[in-house]
Amino acid sequence: MARRRAHKYVPLPAATLALALAATACGGGGGDTSADSLQVWIMEGTNPDATAFFDAVNDTFTGQAGIDVDVEFVPWADAQDKISTAIAGGTTPDVIELGTTFTPEFADAGALHDLSGYIDDPSRFQQEMYEMGVIDDAAYGVPWYASIRSIIYRRDIFAEHGQEEPQNWDELRRTALDLAEAEEGMIAFPVPGSAQYSVMPWIWGGGGEVAVQEDDGTWTSTVNSAEGRAGVEFFTGLALEDGLSTTGAVNWNEIDVMESLADEQAIMAISNSSNPKAIIESNPDLEDKLGVFVLPGQESGYTDSFAGGSLLSVFEGTGNEEAGWQYVDLLTSGEYFERWGQESGFFPAGVAEIEAYADSEDPLVRPFATQLLEAGRSTPAVPAWSRVEAEGVIVGMHQDILNGNATVEEATDSAAEAIERILNEGS
Image 1 (cartoon, rainbow, N blue to C red):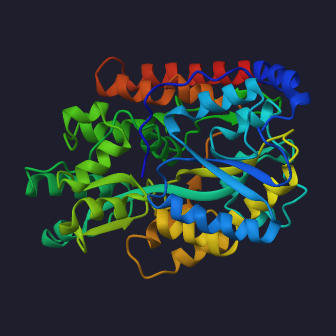
Image 2: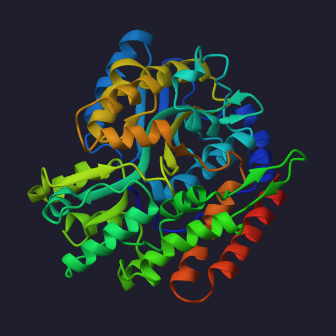
């Protein structure tokens, strides 16, 4: 399920974190760093039965390594502040779950242990996610679970009105227009204003890039290119030109979109791969009424979608790095790798595991797995990207257009300028 952030986080500069690390290096960090205890921080809410899961994992790990494990569940909204405070105070855990966009910042600060020497086969992980933890050939995180956004739709309503899954953008728009006319009381296609990962696919699909690094090391954004603007204009046009969304959606995030599907308000929407399970749990009447299709390409094929999720990292300087890796390895291979995915509704972030889901007969799983394998993208794997997100650059661009405060040209120019400024100042 997508997670709501309670507040914006302003990240500590890498230099500040590095100074904090230098000041606390002699203390070792991590609280009890003896070989018979391991401290682990896991983000709260991904798996509703996380306590039972980790009881089983910890029993197995203790039996194998002879080391006790203390797992603390940390709210996502508090995570970056808590981590920064722990680094400054020398109280970091041994192992931590980090969102893919968090990892480069803390790796660049020197807070994380290089795991590349432990990983036998990096290619077994979903590569977009794996690269989010890699800086200068050092791997500071191991992909744990993955999510992706495709389109969830009301299969029963499509069937009732003789509609089929769209194969390109024009068919998507035409299908939504037809269904809006047939089902006047429903939202044909919500266009959420506060969901940046629902905007990025259209930038990529139109042929633009959120940010690319040039040969000289500088960063360029082509959000404001003709191709990038075409994608943004298509998505915002579904609301502004075609009236397929709803006025209130300008403030919606991914949870609001999911709730619109669960409440039977929306016919189809960009949504997270973990959401079908949550939607049906919220509204059992939708059992067997939902479908999923891969985001169609502008003309054909697929449109790239943001591949998110979490990595597992080991903190530097705790004295328990070896044991920390053993714990990470237990979670990212074999029984527990797959079990976490089954219980949480996310995908294990391994290629073979995702391929198995792509071959499944489950219509609510197979398209998401295909999207992840064939058309998954990540944001730039650089520390400064967290500032782009913290400043709400993509969301601000999108909402300015939806609210009529800026044209597509004006908003994309501002966004491209902000992205380039932030990334180039941080490089």
